[in-house]
Structure formats: C-alpha cells, structure tokens
Length: 380
Image (cartoon, rainbow, N blue to C red):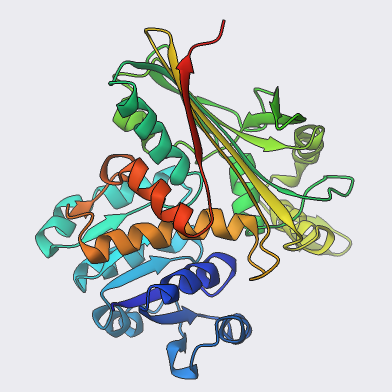
C-alpha cells in the first residue's frame, strides 16, 4: 500500500482516486473547492480526513502534503503543473500529470537533472491524448522493428446522443477544450517538425460504420516529435467530432471570441474567450453518457501497418464517463508502475519512452478499457 496524493477533485482527479483506491492505496484528495471535495468524498466513500482543502498557489502549505506521500497525480489546471513539479522534486515525491500544453511540458523536462538527483520520476502528459495514444505510437514503431514511416492519431470524446448546434458535451474542462482549439497543432511532415492551425486539416474518418470529421488540435502529440522526428517522416494527431463541429467553432473564433484582451460592451468589460467559455459551460450538457474513440495507425516503410483501436463507453454501473476512464486511468496505472518499480527510471521521463505499451494495454484491460491491435500488410 502506498500513500498517493491526488491534486484536483474534479472529473479526472475523482476517477484517478477511484482507480488507485482499488489497488488498496491510501489516497488523499486535495482541491481548492469545498464543493468539489464534498462531491468526490460522496462519490468515493472516503473519510473526511482524506479530503484536504488547499490553495494550489500556496506552495509552502502544500510542501508537507508532498512530503507525506509517495506519489502525486496532478489533475488540476495544467498551468499549475510546473510549480507542482518543482515541489514534488524538492519533497522527493513521484508524480504524473495529464498535461496537454507543450510549453509547460517542455519546461518540466528542463528539470530532469534535478529529478534524477532527487531520485524521483516525473511523467508528464499521462492521459488519453497526450498519453495513451503516444505510448501506442511508440509501441507500434517498436512492433514494426523501428522501420515506421508514418503515424496517425485519431481520437475524440463524444456524447452518445449529440444535440445541436455543436453536437458536443463537456466531458472535461472548458478551458482545456478551448486550449485544444486555439493553440497550434504540432506535426512531423517530411521528417521535419512543423505546426498547423487547429481546426484545420479537415478529413472524414469512418469508425464502426459511422462517419466523423477529424481536424488538427493542439497538445496531442506531446513529446513524440522530439522522440521520433529522426525516424518518422509523418506524424499528426486529429480530433474526432460529429460533422460540422469544426466549422461552427471557427465561426465563433473568427467573430473574435478567441480574444484575451478585455472589450467594452453594455456598460462593462469582458474578455471574449472567457465569455465564450462561460456560455459553453452553461449551454453544453455536462458528463452525459459518452463514448471515446481512438485509432492509432503506424505504417512502415516496407509496406506493413499496425493499428490500435479503442471504443469505450459510459459505465452505467459506476457512473464514470468514458472520458474519465480513458484519461484518468492511464495516469493512475502509470503511477502504479512507478510505485511498484515496473518503471525504475528516474528523472523527468518521456511517457512514450518510459512506459511499455503492451504493459499499459494489459493493465487498462484489467480495468475494462480494451485496446484492440491488428497487424497486416499495408492496404493499397
């Protein structure tokens, strides 16, 4: 049994805590919101002393919490991850996070020497994308003998019953959603790293006999270009949505709702992006029955292909959404690998290098999240 700290009692933090509790770990949930903590406590059935109200910006008060735990899962806003990583290293506490922002992750990796000296492992970007998808890309490259030429990630979380006008629902934070749509998407093209505007590169993808649109979004490839730009000629990550979604968001952004500078209207001032996020928060359904679709395709230069495909759906028994199961649980399984010594390397680690794809797939299957693998000659 290990002592594990989960920072953030929202969707992903609650799901991660649930998963770690199944291992018999002693879990402490920390959040700045009494309401979030009360909801998580009721959901998980944990004692009140395992729920701590904290100020994430008061690092001095957080230090004793890190010191008292063997590992920490960062499930709060990604903007906190860099300072929390420094705190984890100082207090010799392993940690994983759900990342999603290239700049933050790059700065975390600058702390590699400090983490090694402290004897701890830090693994950023351990969710779905980034996270599981990138680990599967690395697994596919290894399975094809290192001869891979192209890798493509197609992934999306969708309501089972879409409602217009956006045919979407909030299954993770609204700030995370707009960040995906506003930041640049990193790709590898002809062997070189490049960027493409999010909400572009529209294509049609058929999965299970259903058609979806796919388009560039940010954050999904994480550190894959750093690991594989010298070997892969092409790599991209696109998000799956019901048809028409990207066009509607582009329209909103073109009207100016991506702006970060305050504007004056109706006798007051507001930030356009924040106003859009507030409207989305109120208008979109929250955590309805959902599904997560993932397809990772890796093709080799000698004409062979390996494909991983996953479809996970809302669990009516536990009430956890597919997005919680497929985002939170890769991180909690990787935390378990750190705690039990399966991952023995120390420093700020690249998830695609440190985590064995086959091992993670097996551990997720034990939790009911199944990834199917096929390997075949490349189709013409």
